Amino acid sequence: MGFTVEVNGKEIFPVIILKNEEEKTSAEVYAFGALLNAFTIQGSKNIIDGFSSPQDARENITSGFKSAKLNPFVCRVLNGEYYLNDEKFKIEKFYLGAEAIHGLLFDAVFSIVKYTANVHEALVELRYDYKNNDAGFPFNYSCIVEYKLEKNNSLTLATSVKNNSGTEMPVCDGWHPYFNLHTSIDNLMVEINSNKILEFNERLVPTGKVLTYEKFQGSEVFADTVLDNCFLLNENSKPACVLKNVQSGLQLTIQSDKSYPYLQLYTPEHRNSIAIENLSAPPDAFNNKTGLTILKPNQSASFKTTYKASISIN
Image (cartoon, rainbow, N blue to C red; front, side, top):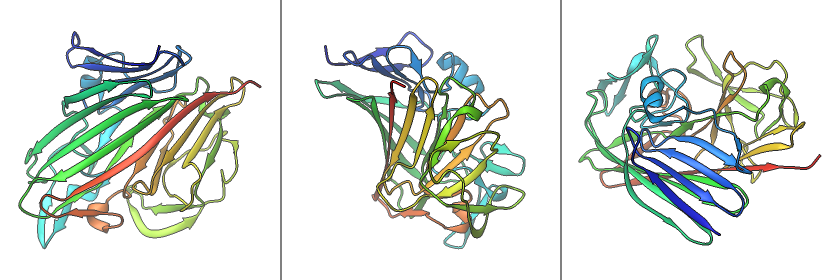
């Protein structure tokens, strides 16, 4: 037995399941939002805090934005406003307080472009064509998301964005998954490949200062740490973040490439899972321009991160 792909069209939106039959690893992907709803190893240990169904996702995506695709902006845009080439724009879509948050594609229904499986991998490619849907982002672009499941419980998420407009277009990209390692996050051992965080103001947008952050340089207990912070990753080959449930041996390793130099961590009040967000740019990048990508007409940008799960014998 090798890799397989199943597509369930009986739900309100298609559900795609990538499987490695030999290792009993699977990834469940929704066409709604192109979101990752489950990543399961050994047939039963799902490490994603997801939804009960596509219908549940549609009704509740803005309550926590679990596994949301963040595009064409990430996190917050101050007052929902920004300037591009001296022209002012104001985002219309979802606000939290005074800030527009988490982009414009989190509830988009992606089309399945293709899916394949062989002895080495199972993958699905999803596509959404944004066509000037929001007055605050009057551009046309395509967003292609590829999920690829490989051996050793490895799942790669690759995103490609192409500007189909006749003008320049700003873009940032990211993900908003919540990881659940079957214990309170207080009990997890955590290591982060960063000793720098961006200083936020009271509205959770960067002030422009970078602060030193000494915790989690090596693996240490998360305990009662509370975070809603953006880390600037070190430029080396180490994983961006490693979480481990020492009691069960369940471990998650996040390995991002240079396209995602930032990592946002958020601890929800329930502390059953933790949001770990690969970001190409920090919050409010449409205004502060830090890490912002400006695509010329017909130009593309690509982003990639990999999740690896494992269970060690203690």
